[in-house]
Structure formats: C-alpha cells, structure tokens
Image 1 (tube, rainbow, N blue to C red):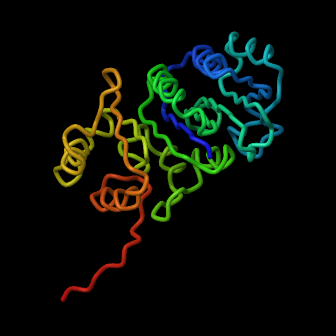
Image 2 (image 1 turned 60 degrees about the horizontal axis):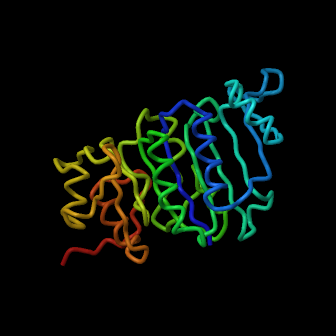
Image 3 (image 1 turned 180 degrees about the vertical axis):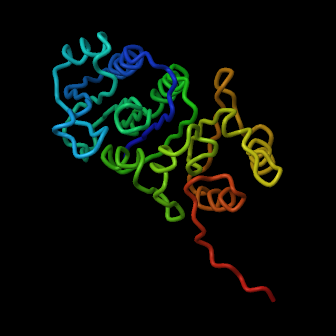
Length: 252
C-alpha cells in the first residue's frame, strides 16, 4: 500500500525551494532517488496542439542545474521506473505552463507513514497551496493516475481536470478524503446560506478542524465512513466531483 499527498494550486514559484524540500525526504527517510525527468514545451513543428509537452530523462546534476537556472519548472523523480512495485516512491512537481495546472504529488509506501506526516505538512506550507489531500492506494502507479483524471470512489465523477482548467481557484473540495487540507478558499464557500466551515462544524463537531499554521486547516476522516460522508457532503452541495448513487425513495 502507498500513501499519496496531492497539492494543488501551489503559489510558491521558487522551483529550487520545492526541489530542495523534495530532496530533504531522502535524508529524513534514508532513501535515494535514482530516476529524474523534466517536462518541456514541444516546438510548434513537433506539437499536435499548442502547449503540448515532452518529457526527458536526465541525471540528477543536470536536473539541479536546470532548476537553478530557471530553465526547468516541472520535474519528477523516483527510485524505480516500475511504479507498480511496493517499494517504489516518487515525487512529481508540475508548473502551470506544462499541462495547465500547478500541482505537486508525493507517493510513498505506507511503512513511512509516521515520518511522512510532518514532512507532508512542511511541504504544504512551503508550497503555499490552495488545497491538498491524502489518500492510500495499492501502488504508486494508482496514486499517480489519480492526480487529475481517474476516480477513487464509486460516487465520484471524472471531471476534476476540466474543473482545474476552467476555474481560477478550487472553491470546493474534489471529494472528502482520509486527510484533507483546506484553506479559507474552501472553508468560506457558501451554499444555500451555509458556509463549508459551518457545515463541517455541524457535521463533525467544532473541534474537527485543526489549524496548520495560519492559513491551512486539517480535517481527518475515518476511511470506513468516507462513502457516507461523501454522499452527505455531496448532497449538501460542497463537492466538485460527487455524483448521486443512492436510490431515491418514493414518497409514501
């Protein structure tokens, strides 16, 4: 099993700082990244559409030099090219210029969960993200595929990529997850006269949201209750990707 952290709309434009934060995980967990790649815009003569991107594998030193010079803005690194292996770990950092969205995702075996929690929170703070969440998947591959286009739950639709491309801010959560990181952007969202913060407090209790610094709040949810929670929050109008799966009862 793998734990994945997804960070969206990161506002820290310092790619080198994000790279150094990612590399610090090597030292903290005594790991080693071995595979490095970066993304670049294809020239017009090689692109099928404006904004098409390519990916190129490089050595660590080449990646570091490119990041330091400002040439490289989006990159990934891992310890293995087989993302299905249980010991694979990987990090993806994406600039808005490559694909239209700014996001960071980290994928590690669950055996590192205890050490990773503080690391994840530090990276979220460094990125100055608008929104983030954590999930668990069978492999790093499954976690990476969920970044934008795939689904995780039965009551989830594949619409998040189009939402990101068509909205300047993530005003509501994609879905509800075991670990959720909200900012005022989501918490102040109002539907039918009720803010998301007030709905959370009424549903879970006033102490459910815990502050991480001044700008980010954490909400943890029991995995066994996620289906029910997603349905309740979706019906209340607070989720981007929720779809109705319950059978409507006929009135007596």
